[in-house]
Amino acid sequence: MSQLVAERRFPCGSALITSGSSCIEHLPPGAVTYGAVTVMQVVGHKEGLDVMERADPLFLLIGLPTIPVMLILGKMIRWEDYVLRLWRKYSNKLQILNSIFPGIGCPVPRIPAEANPLADHVSATRILCGALVFPTIATIVGKLMFSSVNSNLQRTILGGIAFVAIKGAFKVYFKQQQYLRQAHRKILNYPEQEEA
Image (cartoon, rainbow, N blue to C red; front, side, top):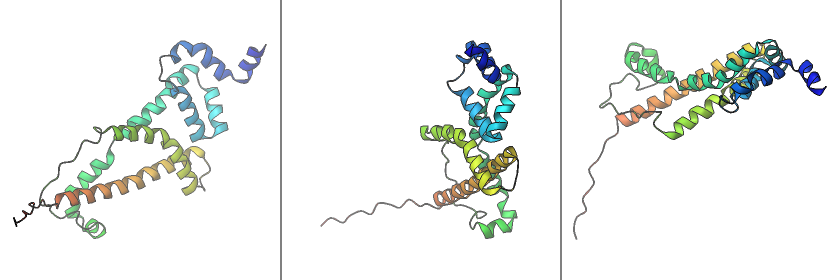
């Protein structure tokens, strides 16, 4: 009797449990749950539940676990590095960039070596944690900056774009300053002490 009541109230959950029990054990732990929570957070709690209840259970089993995977893969795209390379290449033609960021178009005495960002385990941890917390940050930034937008989804997308753009601009500026500091660094000879 209680199973019948549960199936009437939560048809999506019942279908997921009965049809996907063998598939779920092969998925990463919590990927389906994280995907469902992300959908409810981004779209809105009530709207997210409605969307998931109307969706095909097979689509949910495939679609929900791909949400954290896509967030991690998206976080691994280092678009700031491409922007920085283009900036360094064409900045001498744009004088306005030189007035805003002094030294960006000046020739450097030597080109410093840049480390591989994925070689460090701290970077891999930051990528993972940053990717998984991104929907929450996008929702918060959207509510703070775009409160006049009525749609939760549009507000979250705008908040995510604003967060990525602002963070990327700071990251590009910081990396350029590090690059200039390393390019102009000089290694001095160790002063020899005179014997007494």
